Length: 559
Image 1 (tube, helix red, strand yellow):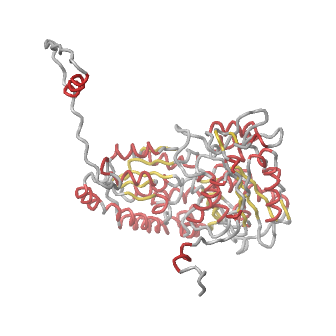
Image 2 (cartoon, helix red, strand yellow):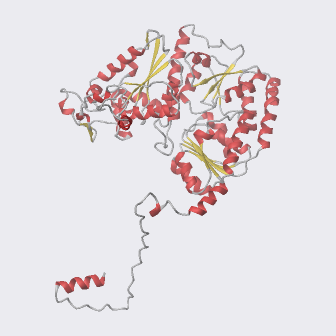
Image 3 (cartoon, one colour):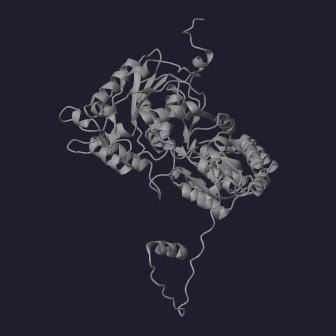
């Protein structure tokens, strides 16, 4: 080792260099101030700042409010898209439920599909956050990104960059599809993805807008992309023969399942359908392109998750009918099997045979382990109502169900069933709604989103995160009943532990004792109430001080 060689400690402190991005020249003129690009004056005459429409002085950056962004998008030619979103995904009593960036939903759909490339067009901070989150949740492929600045955005160069990127990616040996997604700023600026080629070298090009100011939740963004792909596939089917599924066409009529489910659930549903001479078809969103053709080629569509409004419209355009609710619990499974059988013209004997096969097993799973406790439930996945139905049939006292998704015709049966049991159901529920339910109903267990779980635990109430611990497990048929009851019972058993911890720690970690302090802060005494003088008491006049020093002494004494 030479004298100039770095030591082991120095090597450990050295930055790992993956590429030459660190040597790229930084343009500090791209800062943003009050919606106006800092270097806008240096651009060519006639250009506008980020997101601004021609003739406007101010620009719209990703920090602008939803109303400002929406107005800019309408002026930039996106009014038709936004009007369709407003119709498909209506708001509730709140402007928008608390949710992660909606584009995360459509991004996950694309990243789960085989032979599919995904490209994002948006602010760098948004793309970074979405990419990080997608890999946190297990994505194992790259996310494409087309960067922009104020100049490329308003001069149309950004669209040209996107088009060039799509042409470069469109390799039929690697991809069936390239999906391009506009985030908030490109949507507000009217970047016209509809002008991209529909196909390049046999690779399909699908462009969608998923702005945070137009799509309320990430769950509904899944529908945006699923519907766009169904529409593309439906048009392909209308033009002639298409590729068959990997396992070949089904020999019996199939039921397409709409909604992301635990992998075991489609298998369970297939077993429930088998006595009726039916089979479970693909799950939408699909995992590869050719599954879209098989999904459209079905006898019926099961709206397991009821908020896929645009996707259901594509199925209806293909002449397919839709059944709401899901085969959860005893009553839910019986009603669902009956509805599917009648829709597919299955003889009554075969419907009865399907019920005789599965219902006793579900009843046995529910009666074998009953849930004893009061529960509030909330989430943003769209399956909250059917989970509540299953819990109630398992014996739980469910008082409140909140969902960030909207009310649709395909959740009507679940809503009616829950309200008949005295359950308060809130569509488009806000975090404030969910927390108010905690205080009002004082549950033994709270199932909800991260902030709801946090609040419940502060109240010494056991809690479960809906997405990771409830939604990510089987719900359908006997397997669903047994699995859900097990995890809920285990959580309810933690109540004593929470009470013990609360009694031991008391108020430590709250108020003045929150955080880490050095030295420890002293408790502030409560302010003393001011003395009220009696009306009849006469205040004596004090003599004027003879000097400034005497005046200061008098003031200190009075205070």
